Length: 192
Image 1 (cartoon, rainbow, N blue to C red):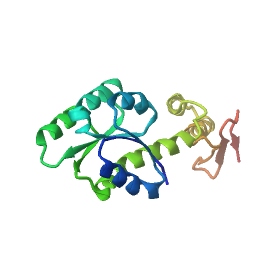
Image 2 (image 1 turned 60 degrees about the vertical axis):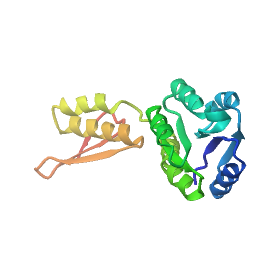
Image 3 (image 1 turned 180 degrees about the vertical axis):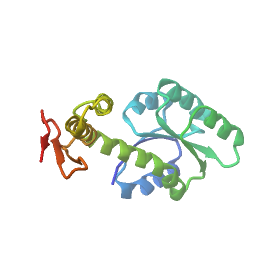
């Protein structure tokens, strides 16, 4: 289960309670502030910023604009009073990841956070994949330039190893009952 670090910017006590209760089963860390300046500083260390656009008399839009200008890739979810289509349009124009209506429900919040949680899980799993030993593109050139089965088998083994990060073994049949074997990193192929 991938936990999110969430910065909640609101002055609304019931919203704080709903967010905390909805995210508790996911083991998310919820940091709460009601101050836009404080949120600007703390947002750099969070996965998602939840902004109540009514905070500080409508200062949520200014905060949203600042955060998106500083880092366009930041995940921001705007909480907008039901029926406030003007703020909804502005929030989307400023690049929010999603919006949820106020009054807030836990289900609506979980629905908009789900793709952000999946994106974080994918990024974490990608970071754990070992880096390829060499560039597959340069190894593909060797495949295209192979002059015989020995060179082709060796080049294919190197490409497979580069892509997977594991050792590779390639066996090619020559059509006359013989085989050419190659292992990734091997200097020469072996004919059986």
